[in-house]
Length: 399
Ligand SMILES: Cc1cc2nc3c(=O)[nH]c(=O)nc-3n(C[C@H](O)[C@H](O)[C@H](O)COP(=O)(O)OP(=O)(O)OC[C@H]3O[C@@H](n4cnc5c(N)ncnc54)[C@H](O)[C@@H]3O)c2cc1C
Image 1 (tube, rainbow, N blue to C red):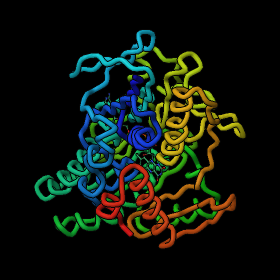
Image 2 (tube, helix red, strand yellow):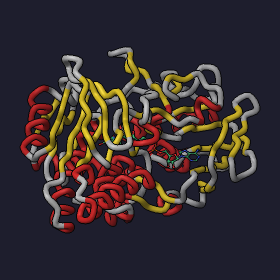
Image 3 (cartoon, protein in one colour):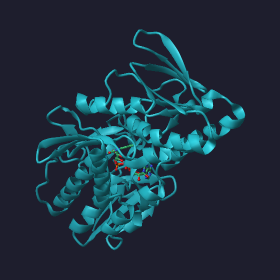
């Protein structure tokens, strides 16, 4: 009897469970563990943070999306992987042993040790943190009536990476609604970004479209701003000339970067930003029975010799190959090398527009505006289908 243990029911974990349940020999046990009972579509978290979508629309019970005859779901929180003993420890469950382990524990926000970031800024990494962002925005806007404090109407987003830009797009819509609801003067949204050219994963024309769209909609995008400190009531930064400024705000959102789960470092894996380098077969050189997928893995792109950017799309593609390779190992057949064919990148700018660089049959198709928003909705629906089933996809889908 072979025991496969999967940690995390995000994109990587749940997709591996689905694939394995179809491929493994009959005498195999598959356990899928997550600290939550629901799977969350993390690629939509920014919508909860800005108040443009609900938790219900982007989550579903893990048990509903797997074949429970083949996969046991266990709710438990992983604290440590004991790779030498081939066991996993939990804060709320007895230790579990495994023959094969899949680690798909996902990301957390990374503050790079910036003073004040932990204490005074709001991170975006899961449902509770996303909800806290919108609660804070709304509480401060509502408070303006009695406080008359302009800081209650100021929001600063730190970082104009992919997540930062997607939040800014949603805030264009939601701040207008809040302003109307609470009868306040304009809500001011500023974004501080160190780079002078944002969204480097897109070509200049698409990135410029995004910048123009944000600026046209009153987002105060300050590129070339080096954040030095987060304070209770604002953000301290230097401009490109080295002059210090402070943007005052009572809502400060931190979207500067992410790392993999801390469990990786705490378990003694050789990691960089909590991500372990995997072989071409997606397992560890030192422990071939351990497969590391999604945001906790550093899967190398042979062309750039750098890890592929961590995305849900990558996590799902890795899960398919890892599942096949575990079955190959059980059956003593040849494993498959992981070859990643990206389908491209799409960034939303609110619910109705965006920028897209899609790759179909090796060719790039670039688009912006409403078409890109449709493409984004299609890509979300596709990922829901890939980790669940038609019934859930139809219930959650936007198209
Ligand atoms: C705002 C935003 C927009 C994004 N947009 C896109 C996009 O358009 N396209 C795209 O491809 N990617 C996008 N991404 C990236 C994508 O969401 C991640 O790359 C993806 O979620 C990684 O999948 P994963 O399976 O590795 O981890 P996750 O989806 O994070 O899942 C990890 C799972 O592990 C569980 N877990 C964590 N710690 C523990 C523990 N200690 N014990 C038990 N369980 C635990 C969690 O509950 C979770 O279910 C976006 C991300 C963000 C934040």
